[in-house]
Length: 377
Image: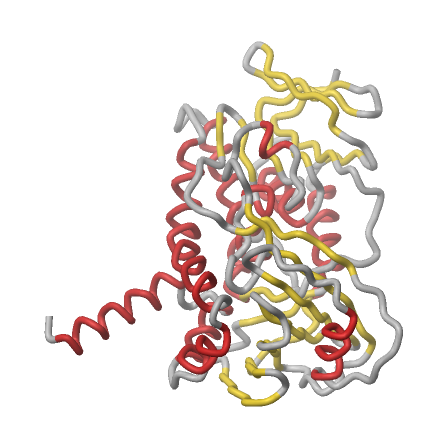
């Protein structure tokens, strides 16, 4: 048996960034990853540049585009544009590069990883975790981090997050060239996808395209719609391969820690229920997971409850409003586009959400304040 301070289930973005933050604090960490490798990660790659502060390394090498403009359209027309203020507040990263960058830095800091290996059983004995894997090896750890993504088995096992998770259905693909999307712009296309939208995010020499439906778990396997969306981004019809994925979206305030175990990223049901943003909550949760485990190991606290409170305050409050917006907007998308996106200040507000300058809660408070002013209260 081999012992560690922390064992992390999952070596993707959330797992690698948690490992990196913990290793920088001097702790011994093991990552258990079920996949051998991945040449393509189905992710749009949008990331607020403000998230750099949650990472203890320079990620410049993984940045493919720096975004200056956000475009919104309704069925390839009715354009609305928003300029992003500040100095490059929104980046497009290539997830394969980004995840590998985090993992490589973690390994340089002493983190160990085993793959491809499945976790088979986990029990708590003598206040420590005993993890038995498919390689017939048993590992011992003081703390356990669940980072096995949207299809997480272990979040439910430890009762972390909602008892009945909600999912967005997504399809992603990557096409060579940028079509008609400017290198410094992202586009959101509404109207084609029922209960959702399509998006196009530019890399250096290719385009990440995604389609997502966020309520009622509507199906997305429709070749005609896929082709229509692709043509709207400036590409001719040709064979392409799509990857379907379920995203575990935020669905209420729930504990995401228990006794010496916590969940991060998609496994914790933190994905944005309106814009499908997953990188930001992954990095935020990974940062605070490492911070809270450090405080426990340092004797400053005697439980991990501080972690759930931190994530709820820094992410959950905003997502509660994001979910309300999504439930209304995607049920009445044409009205939502006319009264929401086309409202004079709306594009700027959405751009500020993407860049991390504003939350859904901030927008809700502004609307409430406006209503109170108009009513004379």
